[in-house]
Length: 401
Image (cartoon, rainbow, N blue to C red):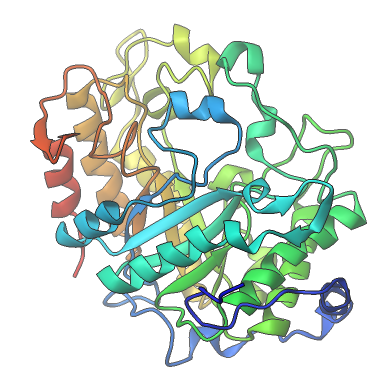
């Protein structure tokens, strides 16, 4: 097969190589040259954090097709070039690709990758290079774990094909998880960290709906195994872990690895997930949110100060030499536009105070500026898309040079 990878170094990876990487995981260095190398992303002024501002793109989000009823994507892995061009034209320089490993992995052999199905990821990286947009590739669904597996199919109306094994409990599944990242490390070796980074798994949490459930110690063990596998192939690759508890909490137990930690900011949930039945069935009974958020008596229960208090623990990472980024934020479409804009402005100010970058859950749909379908929004036509220009103006005003 013709080699179409960005690095020109795509090769098949044998089971022997995978097992060898797993066996050698303890030998990987704890603090590699990633944070000090010449190929690191340019940091924000006065910080160690990369200057990444942008969006998540969904084309490889899930093989469970019901999600396309909520997010406007084609489920084909063909990330539109226009997305990269428009982001770049509007001043943004970052995309995160939250992906489902099942698109390219043989369901009967989790160590077998269909390279033809990897080519859309190669193409996205090339588009990033073309338009000056950093690409973070990540497993939203990984072998043996996906946060979506906790959803209630009946309440959400979304049928989910759940993982049958646990990356935390089954050694074969852990091997498959490491294999995914060893494969990507080999395929993209030599591409600058300024262009590509690896986000290990989306929103690790205590998986209470599995038996037995996992805990933070389990996740740390899995991360260390994956990091070691990656660094055996590409010692200077910059790796990203989401915070624990669905991206809300930094993980001090991983500081020694030097990997970047990524927060997800959906606070207060009564505002960001209002009428978000697919994630929070109870949200359909919540009162219409305001900002600042008030309870039934009119008392303010969330405002800019509470937002700042929630992200305050992330400040500590700079003192430890650990870079941070907020890889997800946004708000469901049923929160009224004026409420959303007021919250949005405060939330981005609070994150900017941490001297770090941020990304919205998506570019097109729900939390993005294009086609969010938010009732009451004033739109402008943008090449056949509905552009929420007020949202765009707000987030452009928050960009840090």
